Image (cartoon, rainbow, N blue to C red; front, top):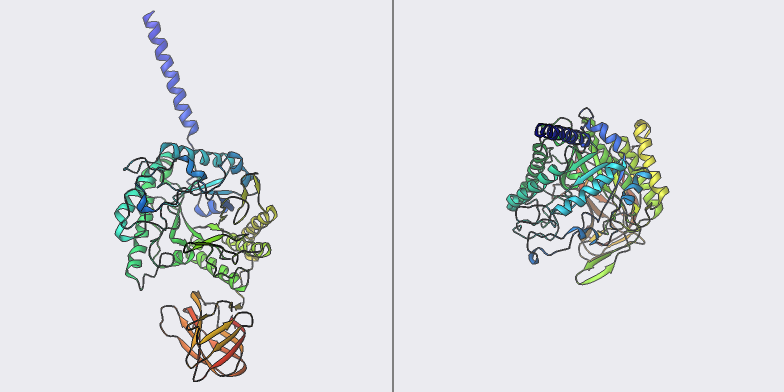
Length: 544
């Protein structure tokens, strides 16, 4: 009896062991190592962001919080969005989207000083990832808001990270710790449909150049852009060290601020990778300036069109044409105005509202350019049904279904037939709405009549362009009427003084040759020995 009993126990253990082994094998998914990064990008097509949900956090003041700070799973609703459901997730893919980006903030979910992520929070993130995978999406999982605009200095332990050389030790410790845990949770049970993104809009948030680093003239910026390369390398190494599918998982890499200009800069380099053909570059673009800065064109015009063409042509030249995909991880434009704090007063913003027609024309065109170069395009969705919403999460339906379908179709059509996609630069009119007077007691400008009054000798104003690529343009052409001659100066980036041209009085056309090898910083207008009244008809960057 005893022998028989032991034999039964042995057989039972053997059967259970076999069952457990089989179950583990069944749950494990083998990553497709033969799939190239460009093939992956082609399959990702268009998508949307589950924004303001898993990335939402208490708007803390760094000085008033004790870290580690665990906000709990309730943080998902702290910005007023719907609690995410499986039905919400499925809505996007039922309406033509192939990719979903899941922005996640981790620094508000730590349970100890070893950067341990709250297991309940990790389980909630995993639940939504699994719903997305089961629905058929390609899923982008990232680190989103652990760098923020109210960081303390020096950085507090467990507060997050910042791309600042004085805080690199804490930043590296935080990022390495959270990515180690993310990599352990999301590994062999997830194939190539799960993509990691190292950071979202990384930057030295307290620095004046945080969105536009100037490493040639600023020592701090020079050190910070190098540090970002190190952070990307550290995170990638941490992911790869976890082994399994993560040894070959696709990973998205951002430049400073995840901007196009920083990705194109010489100082941005992709990390060295132990895997082959597994990296993608990620950028963000809000071409109609819907972020509330109130300085954008707000209309889809020749300037916006040409900037889109130039930006994605350059991204293709540096990355896509060499087999490195570029993902437009965020884009969008607001339907209605929002609010902004000016001191202690909250004011309504109305001047960055973008019409349906402008949005349709702009983002259909943007989709055609990204589709041409096989660059996946993802709408930013901040919930609700206004602002930049893609999915009505309360009613589980697409907001503006025809608009979204048109954008998806534009991407697909351009990707199928890139040679037929129009990417020709046109003459570009410069907006005359934002001429800045140096001394308003001596200079005035009427936006309605486009009339500039230079009341005294050597007084002036300028149009700021930042660092505008002019490689496609030969001349700057001014059409105007002036009561007296005046001076026009084209000033190039990294130059304190530019080329000056004399504009004669009368009704005239002035053609100024451009140095196509440089980028234009600003255009200045100055009176000469006497006052001048100038009415502009147009200022155009001309191809011929």
